Length: 201
Image 1 (tube, rainbow, N blue to C red):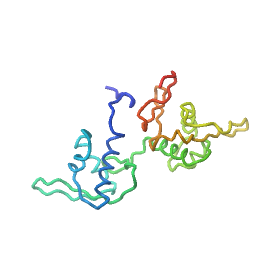
Image 2: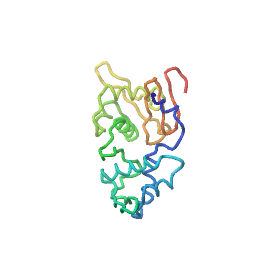
Image 3: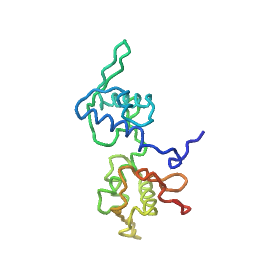
Image 4: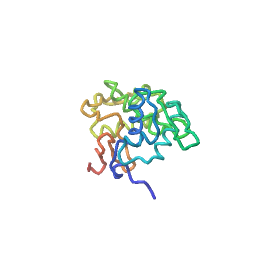
């Protein structure tokens, strides 16, 4: 069965891993050891304990955590925070490799916040991951339609790209607005559709 678009899924915290990471950091600030069950006790009715364990395994493989194996008497593994990289949850798979899906738009969104004025090339140059020009122009175009960006300079017949700025009141949070396949923009910081091609939001 196909997954529902994110705006139709059940409401909950920003995402499971962000909630888990925040709980880990609360322990880690004092170097306190914790188990998967300790993290689970700090969270609402989800995520499942298996999801917490998988994320802890991935964070250990990526060297964000140190793990002390439990003994044969049934004692669980315990963890300590080794590398705190800030409020944003590390995006890692169970084997510790980085998840790069969505990274380009995260970096463009951050670039829009930092730069006073920008065009598509400016966002590409500010990013640390590869972004295609057409992808940058498409993302800018959708956010302009959704009212996040103001046009500060029109494109030039000689080939100069249009320039924009992010409206201060439209920075809704760290998660980049998502352009969905059904031609609408969903803001995960607000938890709602903010623009659709059909005009509804």
